[in-house]
Structure formats: C-alpha cells, structure tokens
Length: 194
Image (cartoon, rainbow, N blue to C red):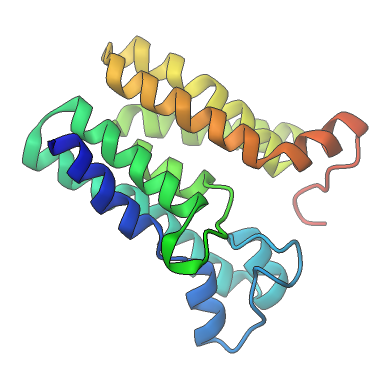
C-alpha cells in the first residue's frame, strides 16, 4: 500500500513537464511540436538557449530527486524508494497533465538515482561524463550509464528492489531512445555541440 502511494505521488510530480512550463514562461515554442518534439532539456536548448535548458534540466532532475529523498527519509524502505523512482520516471515519460507526451527520462532518472543512492548517483554521473567526453554523444552516454546502473546498485547496496526498479527504468530509457539507437547504429547521431 505504501509503495503504491509513493508511486502515485511521485508519478503526479513527475508528470509536471519542466520543458513545457519553461517554454511557456519564456514565450518559446512548445517543445512537443518544435525542434525534435521531445520535451527535454536538449530540445529546450535548441529553442531557447543554454539558460532555458539549464532550468529545464534542474526541474527534471528535481522531479526524480525529491520523491526518492522524501521516501528514503520518511520510510527508510528500499521498496518504497524504488516505487517513488519508478513513479517519477513514469510520470516524466507519460505525463498525465500534458497529454502523456513526455520526455526521454534521463535527467529525472538520474535525479531519482541520486536520491536513492548518492554513491551510485555519483558513479552514474562519472560514467556519463566519461562516455560523453570520449564519444561526444549524449545519448550514448545516457544509454551506457543506465545499462550499468543496475550492476552499480547491486554491487554497492545489495538491494533487489532498487536494482529491479532501475533495471526497469533502464529498459524504459532504451525504448524511449529507439530513434537515437537507430542513428547510432548508422553513425548519424549528432554530437555534443553540433
């Protein structure tokens, strides 16, 4: 019952689209219909620059961080934290308040991971940075990071519920990145800074 409540509350928060709100406040085009049509920080950067993208990124990460941190402190239960993480990322990908047109979930997943385990969150950030510096491809860095995250969690926490939750989140991120994966395989994925 507690896990269900944590999931639903986190889903509601995750459904608040930072990208759409930032674009509306700055009188920018709707990110769901312009640019890549993905309501995430990268598309907001295309539409409104680095400042708008930074605010969007922070908002998306906070949607994952807050529910997992609160669940961790209030319940001290890995299963409740896992449910909150799943809820936040699901809300970002399929936001009930914004017609179920959500983003790809990377920033929200990373925020949720930092709230679930600061150590694993730091390992994930280091992994993303290392892959991004070597490849200059953001999507590849995200995919590698979340492919490794369940192993990081299992090795450092031994928590089955957290490991399973982030394995599911990883699968969702891979599904949401199917177009990026196709471009990666063709050698056509854009590089950071392009």
